[in-house]
Image (cartoon, rainbow over the protein chains, first blue to last red):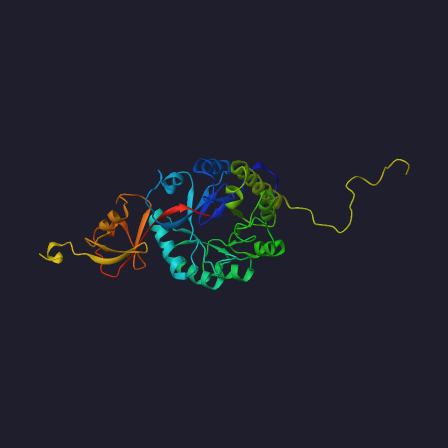
Length: 263
Length: 77
């Protein structure tokens, strides 16, 4: 393909829709709402995750979905669910409350690692797909698990780079690269991103997009980190599309070897 | 006059994990109990694990033992 400007248009297709940004952000843990809004705007994200919880009194002003819904596609999650029943009901409640069939399906199997319970995850995903949901499951980077999730109709898979909130980056780049090369659905790297280079590496390895929350919300300067992740995702994606050089074991001079003085 | 005759009999239900006696046994009374106006947007209700669409709130009657969950969207990752 010629390197025309057209060649650089690179829409992210997800759930039958087209997005300009390949960075998804969470809405939790920011120092305050103003910082969250500024960070989201700076990141140029178009998709923002929210959680579903029992309604509480003493709501402080405008509700979060009212605040974000006009500007971003809200992606509700099932965070904290440990059973298929709870995850499916939470998804159904989210659909009713927010008017969206999109769901980031989280089905946790272990409180310490927050690792997903893959067996229950596939079961819940299958039920929700059958019920008309656009299912985006948080999962491990196990290629077989991801294939099963794609088989039951998930719109993407969302493998973790590292433990949720750990900020350790892509701990298993070889597996992630393999997974991305084989996945029939978009791969959105979710969890474990700590800084811009992590996001760039995930994209270089072939991820379709990156989801981050803690990396931005808990940074010393969330708005600045939002910009850094935005640029990291863009740089990684551009490098992936550009086609990087193969690695070599030894040196390969870049300057001409003929015409040296004294030769 | 009994509570039933007056149409205000109370039922023992659970709302968001808290057991209460609710009267009258309606979604509207549930909303009053938790202090959320009926017209509040981005709220969903489930009774015994089944989502009750907003359109069906007015016609839903609750019974003793019902487990009601009322949710909204909050900050999340």
